[in-house]
Length: 241
Image 1: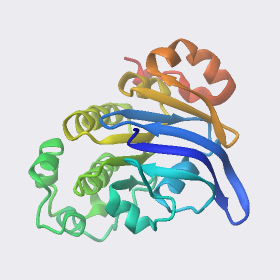
Image 2 (image 1 turned 90 degrees about the vertical axis):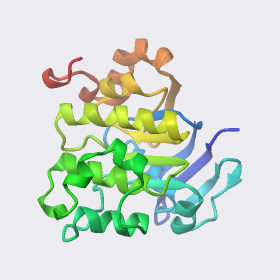
Image 3 (image 1 turned 60 degrees about the vertical axis):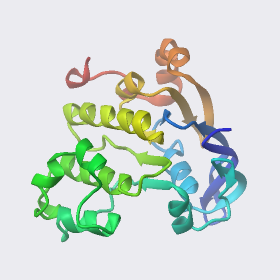
């Protein structure tokens, strides 16, 4: 039984479907990347999984329990935590205040602080004064404070330097390994994602066009890039291993 099982997901805005008949899964302790060009439907798929976009058809189960009919708040309580593309932080709050709201305690759990030790140093700083990398660190920590069974992350690397992005992936790998958390991540830097994730789903035209393990997909990266992914599949100078 998969931690997350999505079958026949069709969703969109109003009566217009953006994604159609999407099927994907995430196991406990697994990192799964959702890849595709801009407009392929990746963000809509994540929003539908979290309940922030209504389903027109399909079924979503979490650890064998149907969550399709649950509100976003109830899905969060069931174990789904969503880190959106814009991070959705309150710029006037401090780091400590953000953590306090998320964790309902004065500080993050020890294991979260172990992942992000800079949080204690930044505690009194307002979100608006943080760098992009620090804001992403805070957004991830805020989600992890709830000890989710499934972490959904949309465009973690958006606007960040490659060195910063490369620092976050080992954190997600560690969370998956040590906490048994499943991670579903939308990532624009395909070559970076392939170093860290276990499996890949490639979206095109609002549906899943290809799926497989990293070992299965890596030899096809040139083919996939030309057909579905666009130029971000190829390393830039600062991203090369």
